[in-house]
Length: 201
Figure (cartoon, helix red, strand yellow):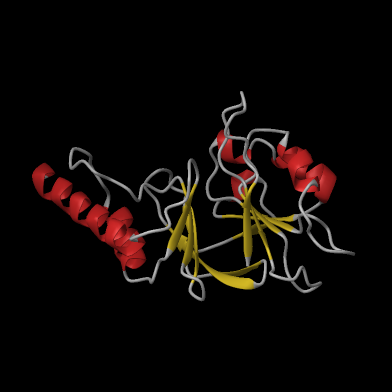
């Protein structure tokens, strides 16, 4: 699996990360997948600069981590140019397929588990690859340092689920990926959230 972030960190447009997931060898059976499409139309030109395989569409499918504009605004242009199949947890995003917790999606040459993580938004999902320990988190809050917030039980359950995974790399919706001590960071966040809940009782 190869992961390329197509976002322009120095650009003037506020946008999420846009991760292009490809297979190691660009085989016909691999699925070139965008995790989120962002809010910057320049992503189309950046897709064209990446080797995505012969006789294959550069973007065969899109998975939206949630429906906020900075993650989905470029979907119409991505649809028009690449005609991908679109997956999301909410039908209101114009998805071709609505995914649910526990579903498996093939991205690149790997299988990813859909994990529903309501908290940042009710339609938020993460994508987890057991084989490589890779987690695409969107804007799910996984690095919580303060116990000042309030949290619903379904978000706590989602965090507990993530803490049971072997996570070795977290690709966030904004900023650089977390590539070290991922499990420790997730468990620290869970402790902080549980502390916040106790303080709020």
